[in-house]
Image (cartoon, rainbow, N blue to C red):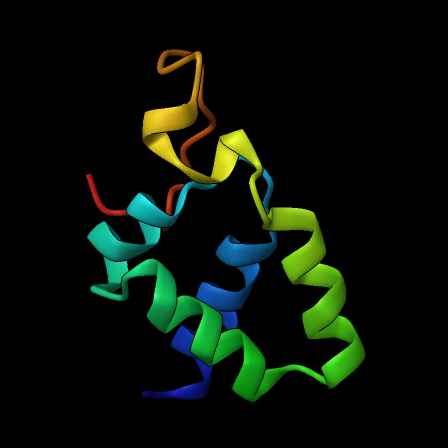
Length: 79
């Protein structure tokens, strides 16, 4: 995977309102693969901080969200 794609996936994973399902749709990586990528690409302390932030966060999972409309959509995201 090229560096630019990895950087974009990491950016999407850090965004609170970007669900794992959007990453799967755009890049084909499921939640576990994103976690593995983050573990591989980040320092141990940064990875732990990220996992603590996203663990159980409702906005990172479409099924747990209470909203659908009004989401920000990056111009780089697939239609």
